[in-house]
Length: 413
Image (cartoon, rainbow, N blue to C red; front, side, top):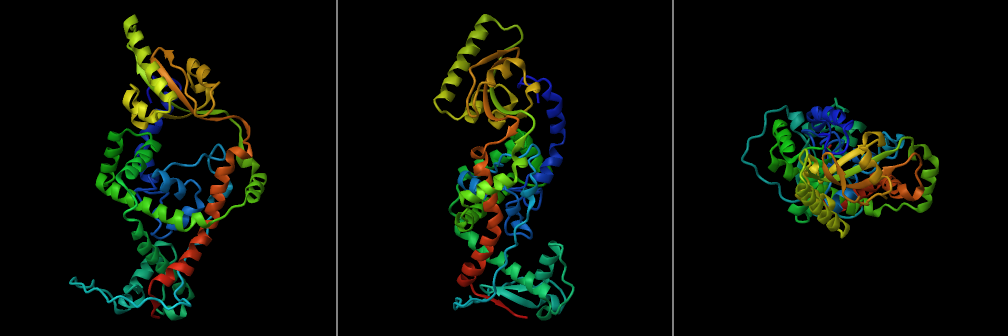
């Protein structure tokens, strides 16, 4: 991070962060790059994927509505409140229904020879809409979840029956998400990937280079992003929207977890547009830069998107991230900048500020002040967390009560 941004003292810290960016990408690009570089994915249809319900930051509501991977604000300084890591039940599909299921479709013939395997592993133990599920597939699924099945006698193994039921649930959801194929457009995908890149504080060039180094093409990324958005839409519509959280529950949760809503150190989240000036600028150069800054500030005040203005007009490297700079302690911010942003409310934009680097227009995005955050400030966050907690049960109910009735499901052990 160059010191022209805002903070000379923050430069070394950001340089260290940039040097670790490859490792961070591989560990947590998440949301989109499931399997290859994911640590926190919305890839709902893979083993363990429904762990998304124990992570409030993976809000399918936000993803489906804005097609971004935006994280919710942390409830504590670390962002890891103890209650944020509670796992919800893993959904499993029922294999029987009181209603008569539709007739099974005719099996699809394949010209490809089967892979050599033992007869036991090739045995079909279940099917969904005529698509067979073999013992091998069930055992692989169980092994990926860290719960290997040793027996071939599924009829007498409760553990094997549970895994078969869970795998049937995965198959049903794979079928259901196809209904959302035509509900995602390129603009949503663009915004989703842009947010992902911004979260990693990467320029577009750096982001694409890291993808290439990870063995992922940009086209593959877009395909995975589209699928993740489709899944998020499905979960939002069919699961989260059906969870009701009364205000009384929110208040009770707030009262029981006040330590998680207590801020101990002041922090400012900032974004900026910089009109750069050369060393020892002439009066004409200063006048031109000031005129340009006044124009940009006026457009921002009228409602033009600050990030879009930064991408077009800023001379700072943060322009590729829409001017986003991240969090600062007050001591890390230049005195001129700090004096201008302290009186602002979150969301407000400063008047143009002259420094040795040029003319800055700074947006105060968030301001964490020491003390207990008011309930009104965290109500939305708590509601989303409680919805997450209940979504696992709601998802299982949807699969067991609705999806299984819309598909032909049978077990054969």
